[in-house]
Image 1 (tube, rainbow, N blue to C red):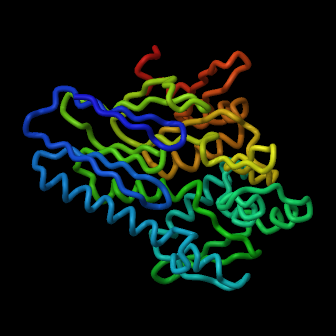
Image 2 (cartoon, helix red, strand yellow):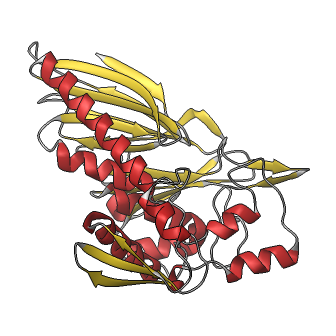
Length: 334
């Protein structure tokens, strides 16, 4: 049996349940959460277990959204962003762990990943219809951005978060990863796939002889599969131009910003990253898109990261460039 759907962004997903045992029940649901479409598929020996598992997965995603969303005034992240400069906010332990991971990868990528770019997001109106900011407005936004101006300190029952400047944390490059990792923590024994707005996470296998098959699609032609992958675990995150890009007059505004320059990322292709941890995959797909295929591929190789660039070429084709660890996932590559 073979079922398929097209994911948001630049992914298309095909699920193979080869040799599906008669006693295994497959259940699929689709909901709208975290501002995007979410597709969930679960396999379980009993249908009630599958229903219960998907209910718990959705509840976990909803809880993550309530904590992280910058669209909600009552979320923990919004509370941190509202604190006066120099004041401290107490964050719960799980968010503290996440913030420390963000801090780590911000340093490792030399700022190509930076979650404290809320002012830049507003300057380009990426949550609206898009605009090209005036030079002075852009410089002001750059001065009000940077995760280096966020300080973390141990606190009773969590950690203290202090903003040294009026920077605002944006969750666009890491919120999905956190939510998917929390589902894995809650449902470690069940076989499932979740497509959260284009980021894929899988756990277990659909059947003893089965595999999760994921096809990477061309960056500017999402109906065209470029590379087939077989996943047994972990998460695949893809960053690239998509329907999320905006238009300001005759200029396209990419929705991925380069924190180092304050401008949209110059790379017009896509990059996919696989990692056991969805949060890391989410972070690095953004960082590597910002770095571009030359510097990014070199960085990924040197850090042992499974990454694949799809680079548009002048004749309309796609140049596929992948690291060694990613090559192991490719079903049709030696």
